[in-house]
Image 1 (cartoon, rainbow, N blue to C red):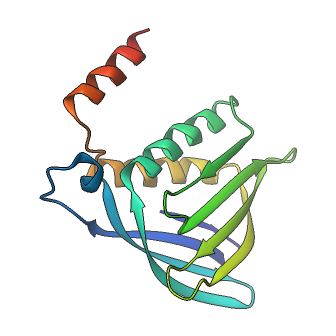
Image 2 (cartoon, rainbow, N blue to C red):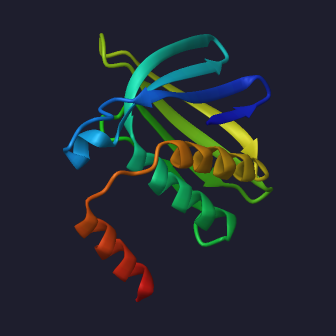
Length: 152
């Protein structure tokens, strides 16, 4: 998944599912990711543990943003390795504020990237690709609850 504009970018590359064979549903949803950031004055990459449900929430919110039901969205992660907050502007732009946090050494980078509204389509497609390759693992009980929630 990549968010980019005018030479600035944040890219999240999923390397693999951390606990593929786990019988614990919570453990089965962890992903090992590499995060690359290029903003004026800083280029770097670091590894982070993300969850499949982080991407599922973001995918749903991206679709709400696209249909004008949201004007602001967030990509949040359980371990706070990366945080993105996008705010829709009046001129068809989205201002992204980000916080990158490495696990080692307590290093934190805050940054901003501004993209056009058309970038939402690419983010939706890329996030869906991640979810197709690494679907959220859930118990049968939770799956049934979600199904019933959708039917109401």
